[in-house]
Each structure stands twice: as C-alpha cells, then as structure tokens.
Length: 584
Image (tube, rainbow, N blue to C red; front, side, top):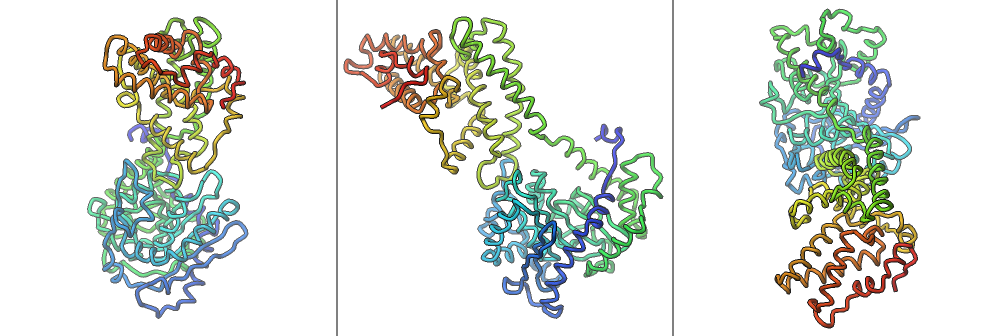
C-alpha cells in the first residue's frame, strides 16, 4: 500500500461516472424502466410476484436493453424479507457455481432469490436467447429497486453460461436497488474480476433502498456491495469500487435524509452537470493526487455539505479502501501476459527432448534428465521451474474462481496446460525416482497435474471429440506420451521386477506386472505413447530386458504369453516407431 502511495496514483471515479452519463446508457436504461413502470401504475402496492413483474427487450442500434420492473414495493416489505438464504439451500441452487475452494459458501437476500425463482419459467428461455444473441450484440440488463436485484441475479446466471472469449460482455445497470448478498457473495463475484466489472449500480446518496440492509459501518453490515457503484446526488456523481467505501458513503446519515427517489430527474441533473463541466477536482488542493481525486469524488456527490460529519475520517477510510482495490488490481495474475514466454520455454524443452533422442546414449529425455550426464540436462531445469510456477498459478486461480458450466479453464489454457503436463511431469517423475522414492502417483504427484488431467478428461467427454487412431498413427514420430504418469508406471514395474527377482511377494508383484502389461498395450493400441520409449537405453527398454529375464525363468508362470510380450519379442515396436503398424 505504501508503495502505491509513493507513486503518482490517480482515482478515475469522476471520469467513469461522466463516461456512463455521456454514453446515454443510463438515460436509455431508465427510459426502458419508465416505459414498463407506466404499464403497472403507481397505485399497485401488493407484494411482487411472477404475475406482476414486467420483463421486456428494447432494441437500440448498438445494444439491446432487457428491463426488469416490479410493482412499487414498500421499504417495510423488504425489511421483513431481509433474511439471507444460504448457498447450501435448494433455493440458491442456480448459483452454486459461485462456490469455489477459496469461497465455499455465500448467502442471498430472501426477497430477491424468491422472486427470481418464481420467474424461472420466463428467465430460462430468455437466458438461452441472450446467450445466442450475445455473440453479435451486447446487452444491457437493467432494473430499479427489486427489479434491479432480479437484473443482477439474471446477469450472474447468464455469465455462468457465456464464453466471454467469443460473446459480448453484458452490462447490468441497477437504479436504487437494495444489496442482495453477504460478504461470501461479494467475494465470489469479486474473485472473477471480469464478472465484477459487468455491474454498475446507480445509487442516490439519500435513496432509502440501497441503505435498507446496511449498518453504519462496514464491520456491522452483513450485506456487502459488489461491482461498481455510481453514487450520486443532484450536484453530481462519482464511481467507487471498494465495498468499504460504498458502505461508508451510503451509510444512513439520518432518518430524515432517506427518501424514495425517481432517477429520471437525477439522470437529467447529471447530464446538466456534464454539460457545465462542473468538475470539483479543480477546487481541491492536495499534493496527494489520489486523495485529491477521492476528495473531488466525495464533493461531487454532495457529502461535503453535510453538517456534523467527520469528513477527514470519511476521506481517510475511502482513500484507503479505494487504494486497496487498486493494489489488488495491480496484483491480479493475468496468465495471458506471460503465455507467450511460457510457450518459448516449452519449445526449449521440446528441442531438449529431440536432442536427447538424436544424440548421446539415445536414452530419451526422461532418462537423460534423470541422470544429468551432459550440460543440457542441467539447462533444462531453468525452463521447468518457471513453467511449473506459472501453471500452478493458472490452476490455483481457476480453482478459486466461480466455476462456469464446462471446464474451469478456457480451451486455450486447457490445451496449453495439457502440453505442459505431458512435457514437464515426466521430468519431475525422473527427479522423484532418482531420490529412491516410490508410489509417485499416490504420494508425490502435484495437485495441479491431477486437476489439469481431470479437466481435460471432462472436456473430452463433454465435447465428444477424439482424434482417430489412424491420424495418431501417422503423427506418432512427433508425438509425446499422452499419459504424463507413464514413466511412474515404468519405474514401479521395474521395482516389481527387482522384488520378484529377490524373492519378494510373488502374487502382489506378478499382479502388478500383469496390470502394467495391459496398461502399456492399451496405450500402444491407441498410439498414445511416444516412440522414444523404445530407445535402447530408455528405462522402458531396461524394464523389458529385466522382465524378459523373469519370463525366461517362468516366474510369471509357464504358460504366460501376454500380448505385450509377443509385441516386444517380435520387435513390432520398429513398425510402431515408423508409424506403419496397424493393430488388428
């Protein structure tokens, strides 16, 4: 935090608010809400239900607006419904995707989730429709008061299904809406920064509804805000992102100040302020550029004029909170930034693999790295470490984010992680067994390798796509072994051979070796192993010579004549290496 304070840092909350106002998205969103409100009428005061909620799509040249409007609700009704529904409840089942390893639970406002669930029959086809059209045009999802709460939940539900790599990101704009979740809910959304930026909540400083579930301090408030808040008054507006700032700025000042507001006149005031260029920053004198910006933002929303208010204390809290958000943004891990550098390091390992196959003892890169007999084996280490750190971080971030439908990693990262796993994990296995350890798969394997493999399996099952054996056969000379734990199986098979030769447990070791034979033969028939396993000095060929000796002693039984044993004795692996062997 201190480093940030030393740098020349600026707060852009005024600029963000001005951009939102000047782009007409606020006025167009409110116009859509107003049109639906006119169909309900102001005299309708019964509790909202699925029959009374208005939902409609409005066309604009550059985007579509979907508005949610409920009949006017009394603050007392929402106070009665201020209870929280836990994520473990069936009522919150549609939002369980927000749970993650880091954030396993959350709670949602009872009034909001109950009304959302009552609208599911209407919202399900709407979600499918928006998911399709989002590929070509962006959507604004909007609503006021409780309608804004439904708009927020619908947007979250939609984000779960959208692939933001190909779809236009939706923007949810709410006006005077109550908070809808606890700290777990806020943290779940904030962990996925792409989702958090999809929410803009417009709240007047005196509007009663955004204050309904708030206490006077952040520590006392069970409900927490998420997304960006455009806090405003008739004198201006500014954007804030830190939940702590928003709680402080919207905290109830007095019972007299709380009102039920119509945002039409407020938006017009903001537009007039924009035309008049009424920027408060020019009147603020402060050598700290960030504090000056925050002071201007607080002045813009009209809080400087409030009597009996410790303005210095408020500014300190807001400055520190907003700086905290800025610092967290700077620390966010963006795998895209380093992806190309990681590709270069992986290409260096691919070059290393080829050199090991073509030069020296021709043992393959697994055994060469295990024994580190030449300088290039030591050089390979400098590529492995950054690759492992990078992919461990990618997997960790994916685990902590809310889980969208489908694989936790986008296809680009999933396949990149698979290439990394298949190239690097064998080298870590080599180091593991070099130290004389056993049972790598159950005792030594890193969790990030397990997850990368599990996510790939799930993706392949869901997509139903697989590469034909004929295609794999033709490319076998350039392939890597698909099972990144192959060499761990080889090492365990060699240990079984040694134990069998030394008079170890016959039944256990022979069963292990039979399973290994079946495992290898299955890989061969799927053209899923690299030809480098058949290099003369490889660990696999050493296992075969040890195993051939065991077979000669009939330690596997006099009648043992497995398919793999025939394959190896007939030297069919030469045809396999050339890509011409067809299994029948």
